[in-house]
Image 1 (cartoon, rainbow, N blue to C red):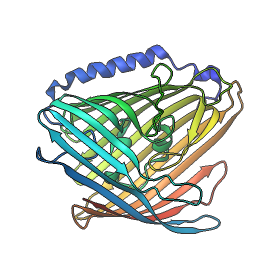
Image 2: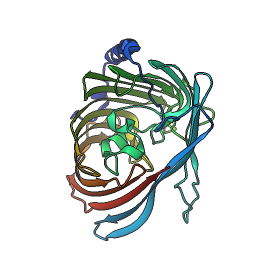
Image 3: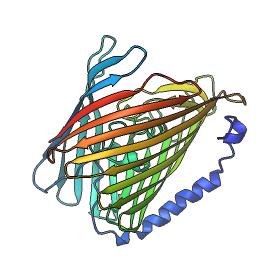
Image 4: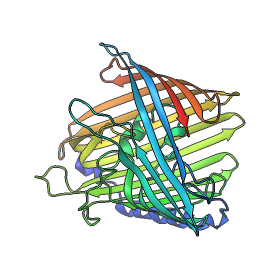
Length: 377
């Protein structure tokens, strides 16, 4: 890990980052070999007739093994939406998150998660305009109703969020290919403010660029690379230099018979301010300073009839400090998830996860057991 000082952070070579984006753009030109469509949302319209209503709910029971143990019921997600095709060559997709409830302090209420229109004439070159999930890495690209573990990885939650947290934003995306294509690609330009977009946002002062390419060199093997750069006005009003965040990552997936193997590495550098927490349904906390983080995970999934055992190992290593200071605070988290998924039918899934957490330098009593039932419609 690099010490959290501005001099070292500035070793990130801007020209190299530009070359990465150029390479990803050139790779996308090979997509003329693609011959299948790819759904930009979690689902795709099943026909060209009428409006299709869809959604899913994820109620769960949580048991946290704190020093003062807690047990509660909650909704992970409760989403409903509509989608459809419009003759000719256009489609739409709208999704609401409705699991936010009134608390003694505030009322969040339902909010718009996705709302975009897509031009779909060419399988290898599509355009989506609106609010959508940008694509970075393997796990973030998986739909929330298709995750193999109840929680996303800690590094994915903390390193792939926007300026205000979360992993959706308002902008334009170019994409093409699918899981059976030689190459898939996603490239987006967005406001960078997440689902709660500022109406006076100016792309000159705040912008997010995100790119992802996935290569399938042989059947069942997928190799991916992702890059994300964001700039925004300083969160501290006394600071005149803009906040910047740089992310790059690599991932691999291999499917053989009933086994799936996943691995992912993400590196993130924040200057000016950084986020802790957040992700899908979480509330991030903004802190001032610099942050250098490295996250990774490995996961193995085995499908046997209607049962699916899962094991996941993940690490998240961070160094944070004040701007201009060589003094840093180091933290290393190691999490293991032991899971079992059961599918009674095509619309229902029951997940059982035990999450064992180890922190350094200070161990925290925070292991947990989560049981979730998901129903899709």
